[in-house]
Image (cartoon, rainbow, N blue to C red; front, side):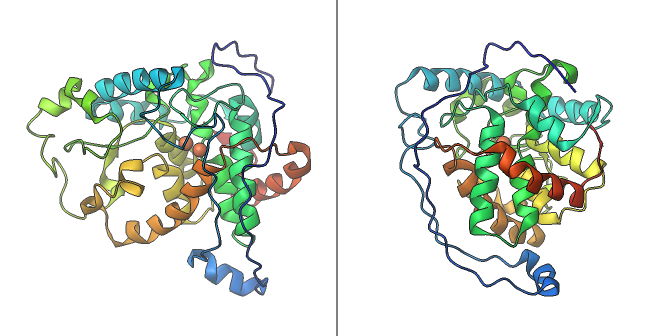
Amino acid sequence: MTVIIHDPLFYGSDDEADELFLPEVVEEQAPPQEEEEKREIAIVEVGFFAPENNAFGNSFRNYQQESLRRIIVEEFYRKNHTFQTYDFAMAKKEEHGRLNKGVMSIWECCELLNEYVDESDLDSDEPPMEHLLQTAEAIRRDYPHQDWLHLTALLHDLGKVLLHPAFGGEPQWCVVGDTFPLGCAFSEAIVHHKFFIQNPDSRNPEYNTKLGIYIDNCGLENVTMSWGHDEYMYLVAKGNNTTLPPAALFIIRYHSFYALHQGGAYTYLMNNEDKEMLEWLHVFKKYDLYSKSRVRINQEEVKPYYLSLIEKYFPARLRW
Ligand SMILES: [Fe+2]
Ligand SMILES: [Fe+2]
């Protein structure tokens, strides 16, 4: 599949490769095959070294720093917080949940996505494929037996393909950035909370209370999140009958929900199953964020491994 994209956000490759990201590896004994299945959901904490600076030499997710990128990010969140309403998210879920935009393999989607740079990302301007492989390879090194987690890392951002013209060329504000629940009050833990003043839902008495349309511990699966690549990729994985475990689907669906997994907000919407899955998301998020340093991965070398995982957990061609 060859698609040519002309996008103003395309950045060419960067030769500056140094090794900022060097997690300490704790040696683990390989378990016998059956045991490996059982411990799928048991978390093993490993030593993790977080670098101090991102690809631009700034601290991670620092929304205060003065830079052109910060201004772009702020403008991004102004739009995102103004236009992401409950009705908007429901309509997008209905539209893209039909999965009638195209048919392609996971790897083809990785390649298709590779020409976009995420405007909301303060920490990296690298092509997405580089970020996906950096994340996956860092997790693979520290969690060698959780192959489902390696694959989850590889595909967690593939929903950004919504930016592509073949998928309607959605604007960045409804594809990337942090996500948050709709139908209830916007937590102050959400980045650039001030912009919600322009969101019509914040003046809707049905939606602007702590619980809004939800009940305590209703479970995140019953909560409508702001629309973006997390929810879309979850729908793609589910709709194509992936055999990935529930923790993988939870990571894909909520990895941009920073108000929850970093800010500790909205915990009253979670049920017990969500709380268990959140442990895995905490593992994943460190790699998602801190692998955004300038470490190059040799794609051709690692490709066969990831193709074997795709074959294990997904059909050869998926509906998107
Ligand atoms: Fe993401
Ligand atoms: Fe990511």
